[in-house]
Length: 229
Image (cartoon, rainbow, N blue to C red; front, side):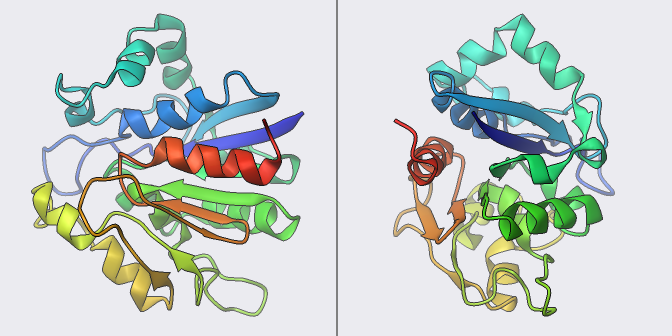
């Protein structure tokens, strides 16, 4: 049985503000849901363990699609999010896939986290798949290989675009612009021609999705790489 670890944020506010953030719920559940009829084991983690904060904007009625609403109303599933293991407790060597969810919270606790960098390198070096969606791609920013080079250097990736950040009205309170930081590390960044439509980039065993509309497409791609039907 294939094993997948999903890593979520522990950050619940934009730093220096009273504005709440956290996990964008749809980016977890659409990926998670795809594998429910597959022969896989999925384990949930967040940076610090315990409760995974959820961005309240992702729970607004116009954001709650059918799949996300079903999971949000599932008491048992939501309890899983309140009692999550810390990534520090994980054994990445045991997993075939690591997947990083988004939401603006990850911009504050993903890029410089040593447990995240260790987990990515361990999964990737033993032939596993590294995947992320939207702001979750920030987990890849500071990961370096054995030669001291950025893992994403010269690799085809995507992630939340500058235009989408402006349209989301978060430009002034985010710590950086993800598209610009990916490019600064030598990644071959690309995006959809139109904001907020599904878009995925694949570079060998690295799978990235652009925005909240992309997690199912990321899951499908990961499933294909795993040889699942």
